Image 1 (cartoon, rainbow, N blue to C red):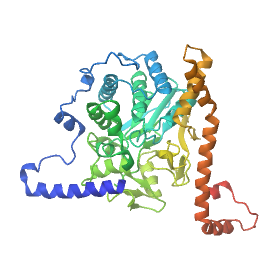
Image 2: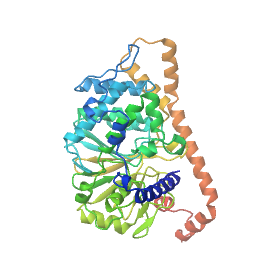
Image 3: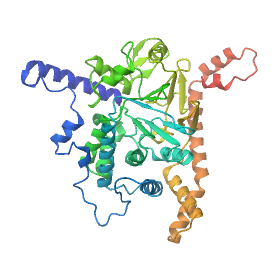
Image 4: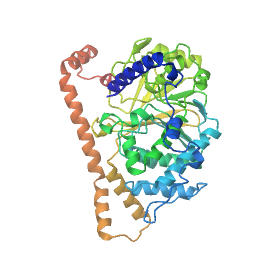
Length: 465
């Protein structure tokens, strides 16, 4: 699907280039229209502080209300609402205001393409990979580590949007805590924080446009696009670890200061026509390979590249860094993470059982204040089970008056959480069995070659390999 998207985009750009050459009157038009330009053409404000100001909240709206500046109580109430009733979206006025104030915050912070941050003293930094609208994975991690606070920071490494049903709920949660704790919440832009892909249907890799226009409206979609273009492409943690969505640019010897200088406030280029295009594109789209050098990522499209272990080593050395964390793909092992390039490159993917069918685990990376990190894997239960479980916990903590039939139904759902997890495990094992059967000859010879003493056993590391 992504390869087809890039093939079509490349054809469009080749035709466009011919038209520019033939018609000097359009030769000065930008190659990639920015979200601000598009919003202005559609009559949507480009001043973030005006977003939502002309919207009215209907009298029958039953969701949470917001006022600014945001307080801890408002943030916690919104999180409670999303945990208990995510089917009722936050009103478009409040969503637009959150987007506007977070965009203005990034502008006021003079946020560039590279963001520098620190792990909280005596606290921790939790790093997400792709979530793709899978709210259950997001809430499970917040349940385990707590929402953002003075001691708990979060970095979402792009691809929050598209494919899943609840990208909007993940965004509004992280946005409200970004306003409350601006130095404890960080977001990198991924390849799916991009207009062209968002406009595609969910079955073809997109879906965010459909979600936003269904829950909110088209104006909010254009506000999201302007917000995306203000997000950094790279975050550097404690001057040691670089976090980016896709991969290391194909450009030899690229430095962080060069990345900082690029114009990121535009859509990702469909065709790479300059060094700046290549850097912007690769940071969101590139994948690793085991051989040295730069290769083609043909499965993703004609512009996509792969980078080898020598590229990772050189980039880290040139920028005085020790580790690169990226996301962008489900590890082939179906685990939530994958270490490559002699331990210098770590892929983390947080959406478990991706799209409801991959059978993979999700994972996060957790750094402590000493910059030691742990990898935590999970298999999130379905969202209905999580909601029922949360409501049951709330009921046990402090009974409230509720309809008895509804309460009984929620308790029954909560009791099925173990069954739901067991079912996911069974599905993952069934898929693994199929893979083993399909590759049994190769696996047999591989294991026999390792097991010289004919013990019938290999190490877990070799089995994963």
